[in-house]
Image (cartoon, rainbow, N blue to C red):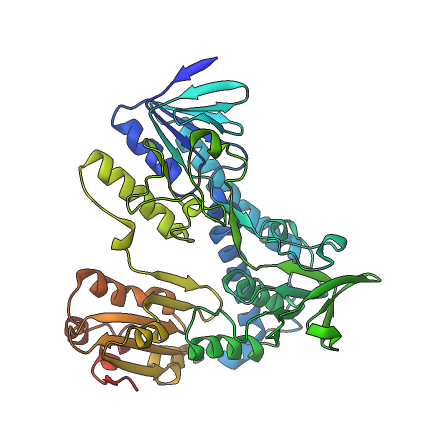
Length: 459
């Protein structure tokens, strides 16, 4: 059977459902296809479940340190992992069901459950039926990368997806990968009570960050008892009784980590290998990401790629922004582009990292004259009052244009405070606008104008 639509959306991640609803609201007949779980990575095994676990871990951490605040708790703090998982599942369940219900109750939207594969630039096949449309939007997201570590096929391992099914406390969790996903899970399980070791092949954690940010994150984790092994360029894995051993050194060196469970957190790959893109003529790059232009159009007219599968952003907020770009350009005649957005993201360990714009390293490489300011969280009143003084804040400014180039806030409230900086960057206003603002006391944000008033030339 062949059914004709005005538009077909493949995938229900962060951008697909909003785009489907927007097009349907304009009177278009839209089909949206989902093969597994509604809501994509963020809802099912990304942002929502991990931040729910972060919250449970924070509660356990705070309870253990209650005496520091004059609050006495009798007996040791216990974590019921089954209840932790049940809470996480409830949060995820409500969100997933919400997306499903929204789509199925939206006029002009037909929800089809199954695996979509292209047959041509204007047709996809799902469950043996053919769907046709002149406009097709691919929103298939990504999945965990399983690296070709020698021996990995001989041992059990977890990914960010399968770890969501864990309802017990690992005795010793080995986390391979020292970036966002790995660091969050490392701290979560350490706070739940597990022994945790992070293994990273690079010489520093989160290699895209400045050295002081990476060192700050390392200090936070080590202060909580997380072990970290850096420079592990030649990992091999083997089963050793009921344990898992990871060797770290080249040429048979002695450095190794032995644990009870292994979590792989070394990156993502796009869900594009089984879409039949070749039948539509849609080009992908060497890593499998769909090649798109600045307006998210693929190599084939009438086909767009939005969200993580296009390699132009790896975050929920960039995926949603993809929807906004496509919808505004199609429906409002705008010319919004991917390059309009400023790099911004968070690392949701505790305390968190909020990042916006260029790193200090990138500014130096650009060769431009710059000013910079920095302040430790020990000199931020709100942090002192909360007893959470790890980290620092820093901002970099173009010395000639006076526009803010980038900022990092590693510390309590950093994931929220960074937005005041980001907003001024989007406004392309001089840093003095923010410097002269009168912020509420006592907050983390109130120190941002202070930092901007103490800028010094970058060395």
